[in-house]
Amino acid sequence: MSVLFVCLGNICRSPIAEGIFRKLANEANENIKIDSAGTGSWHIGERSDPRARRVGEMNGCPMNHLARQLQSKDFEEYDHIVVMDAANMRDVLAWPGARKEKISYLLQWDPDNDDLEVPDPYYGEEDGFDNVYAMCYSACENLLSAIVNSRRIVEP
Image (cartoon, rainbow, N blue to C red; front, side, top):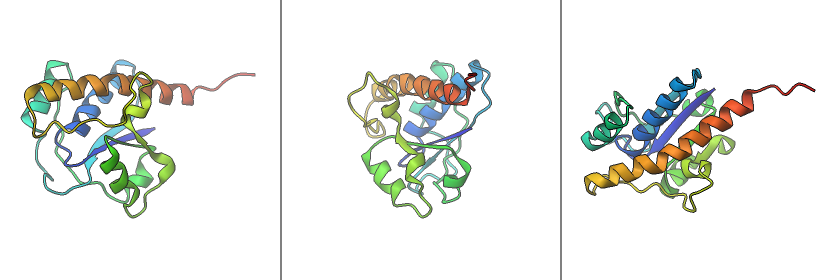
């Protein structure tokens, strides 16, 4: 099983979600391929935003990711392509090789959240990164649970 988180520049939201999901999968002893990417190319090769790294590290999610851009081969390599907002969804669906059945909003996985948009904290204050972490955490827990449950074989 494999999960790719996608946002715009791959330095804030998707690395935070990747860090959370990696921590949760490790704690559950689940072997899942996990990565993140951006639809834009501005930050390729850069570390995550220092504020994203701070919130990840404060919560036990080391953020060693280097930004990369989404690639057409990702639609073949990943079972789940998870986006952060409507603009990401539009851009990912328009990507060459996009497979609609693999793409979802992260917040679709949180039944207690009425919104599908994880706001981009890049131009805001520190607390925006804390809010993004909190929004992503529950959704990541539910996504992991759904993946684990989908792999269970039900005996007749």
